[in-house]
Length: 182
Ligand code: ZN
View: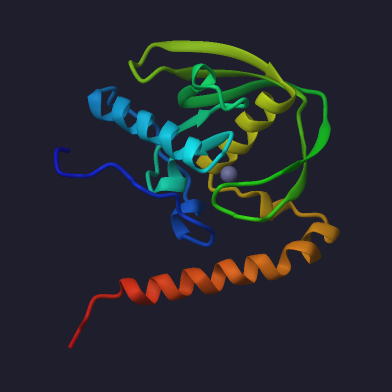
C-alpha cells in the first residue's frame, strides 16, 4: 500500500466509519509504525487521552493512549484484548469524535490488556482508574461503540442539542463531498 496517505484529521460522529467493527491487524510493517506515530500526533493535537483507528477512518484494531500528556506516556496497542475486568466506577468521559459532549459512564475500575506492539511483539499490561477507563473507551471504538450509546436520561437531555449540531455539520460535509454529476 504505497499510495495511501496517512490520515490527517479526526472524524466526528455520525461518520458511519465510527460504527464498524474493526478487523485485526495482520501486517506489522513500517506503514503501521507510521500510522501509530500519526495517531499519537493527532491525539496530542486534540488534547485527547486516547485515539482509536476508526476515529481517523482506519477500520483496524489499533489505538493509542496517553493519560498525562507527557510524550513518554504514549502507548500503542495493536489487536488489544481486555481481560480480568474488576470493580465498577462512574466518571465523566469525553471523546475526540464527539466535541463538547460529556457522558457519565460506568466502567470496570481495573483491567488487564493483551496486545501487540507495532513490531508484532505481544505484551500485557495492567491498569486502574483513568488508564483502565481509556482502554475500555478505546476498545469500544474498535467495536463501533460510542459513549452516546449509553447515556443516562440526564446526559441524554444535556447533550441533545450538541448531538443534533454534529449531525447537521456531518450532513453539510457529506453534501460537499458528493461528486459533481453535471
Ligand atoms: Zn472516543
